[in-house]
Length: 462
Image (cartoon, rainbow, N blue to C red; front, side, top):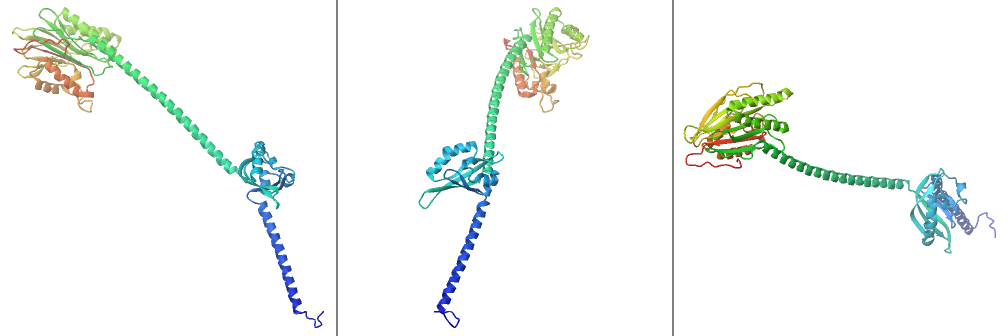
């Protein structure tokens, strides 16, 4: 029934409004769906990771622009024309066929599998792949959706770790090698040290034997005299030039001498040997001490000065014989540039015996030597010494020397003292100098036994 008034019935108006509202809602839903589809497609294409969908046989059905850009491929060359395995390297294909695909069929999904894809330019792209099998409403498998992540940074990180690990291992190997070389060097140094010590000991033994050949190993027993001697070696591996001797001339007289040759070592030893035997021979020919020194001067100067290598020595030569007074001994001395003899009297007096005018022996073609004389009474002791004693250093400076004045004061505290007592005290004094004693030192003491005592021989000379 139609309305004549031209107005639609109230019910008709309501139906029209409802229908119009439904049409608007449908249009809005369609527009929103289109927007969603456009947004999803855009997100899919430009996602920061690669996406692709494959059929169950691996044929690529869909692939996003991100992955195509990574591989440098065109969509029309890939979709429906290539399988997923075709995008992989040879090693990747092998792994896909033997591990990846079987595990995916068994589990339905795999995540974070490391593979390598091949780019259009022949390069390799390390990736991490996650794949999921999608099923239909009936539960049947339909397709495989795969997400691909660029693992270049991770690969670079791993390679850096490997490089660092290799460097660490190389550094460790080099350190081990250095340690081994250090151990070998240490062992070599130890062997060298032991060899050097053995050589040093052998040299010291040889030098000691040679040194003993240059001086008597013991002093003879002299009637009416006590004797004592000491030889201090400054270095066991450096042959010194000090010398001494005591020997019989005849039934009444005994000759003695003590001196110091210039220099050290084998050359000084040769001069020492020549000096010692020249003085013995000269004293046996002529017992005058000054004459013996004159003979030695001529021999040394003739032997060495002509070769342009002058050698000289200091020496003090003496003759001992019984004096007119019973129990006393007369001593006649001549000195060639040698420190004066030191007298320790029985009454406690101590003084040097002057021997003026004495020149170095062998330094000049002619030399003048004078003779001094003294008498040793019972209890008196005469001490001969080389300059190693008076030139011992007593301070840090090279010129801080012990000196003759200190020696006289030291002897004054000893007097009266017999030869052995004096030598023992001086041996302790030499030891007290320590490193300050740079030169060898020879000590020879002769003394007349005090009244009531007997002459005590010293077979070992100490």
